Length: 362
Image: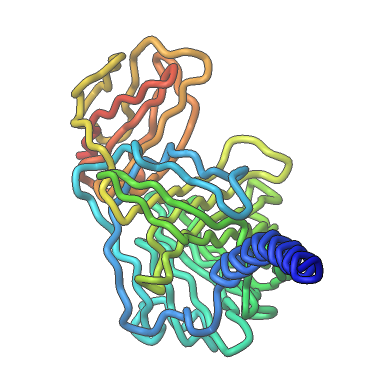
């Protein structure tokens, strides 16, 4: 009898111990499964013909640069929109692109609105031959890596795993001050899967198991009469691979500015979302007011209003693409002479409130 009791005691001791141990083992398994999902593999490569239509949303929106790591939440649930304005995200054949010949060796183009990234992909990596985008003032700005392509990612590309730090070498071609230029360009790319978790979008949409691809390309070149400049391309792409090999949310900025800082020569921003943003009509629910005159205009418009010292403005085209971002003050003039005829949007952020008005170029 005593022996039976001792045997039962031993059984209960080891049963409790094994039960306690199963909890951390289960947690470890779940954590490993989470990390396994937070990665890009060659099976996630987009194929030519894949397309997705995303909504243009507020380019003032934060990029959540500091929100990184596993299990994070990126909250864009209240982001403003432009009442149904869309841009396509597509994987295309370079031979069908008017600038495709500038990127020899590329086998695919990832088109995000007017921004086109040319690349090749294999079972081990994705490599870029460069990109171009259409800017309202300068037209096509073409950045090619003909001497040394840029590695965008290596497979598998996982959160907490390998990162990319690669050099590239090529040229920049554009029309500047009325003259075509082609200048040597060198740069470095840093890229990683910098976070995974939950993406909150408008219309009460919640996407779980989202991963974020982050990259920053920082290149140096020269422009006539300006001298040395930096070309900085920063992008955050959010993926829900359970549903698509194309991003469900994109936050992308390209800036050309004098080395050492100063006023950007050009800055293009594009923020796209699977869900349309919250639309507030022009002059609707304004918390402050400003005027633009003359409007329509041929060359110069002047902005009048009471702005604080930190007020900023963005000029957007009719598709919602940012043409320029700048500080704004009462009586400031804006040169629209280089813009095509048509309607544009002037959005001013002042003291935490945003107001948008139309500007018409004759």
